[in-house]
Length: 164
Image 1 (cartoon, helix red, strand yellow):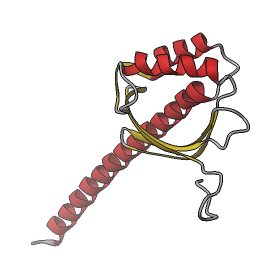
Image 2: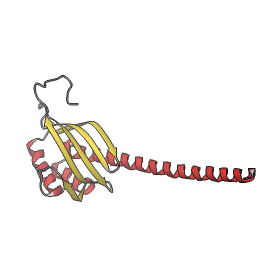
Image 3: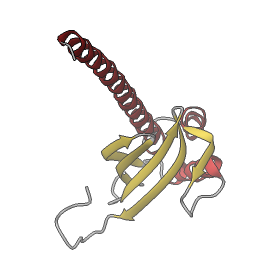
Image 4: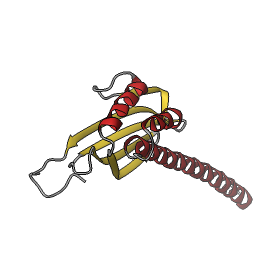
């Protein structure tokens, strides 16, 4: 092979590699932007659901219905039936029974269309509360699926590690 052909092949390979790497980086940035958007939206929705006591209960539910939870929402908790309306019904009752319900996010992460939130939820300011993990599947900026696990914070834990 002549020096000219080697040079042309090397330039062609370099150009191909440059274009491919650029496309991969663009896809990676787009994926990262979507993950960040999903995480921010899930945090916003969880704050409305659990912490915005300054809003009237019906206002909260309307925001959740219109901005957060898809009408095709699937709930995996065995204690909640009826999709998003079942969830909203439980929280309307909770808002009345626990007007000072609060939540703080301790950790959060996202990957692809999934978001994880590690929370400390308290029904009253003086309660120890519970540690919860929520996993949301997001689609088009809405929560379409939810899994959750939780456990109450004990008065006398068997270690000093805390749950957070």
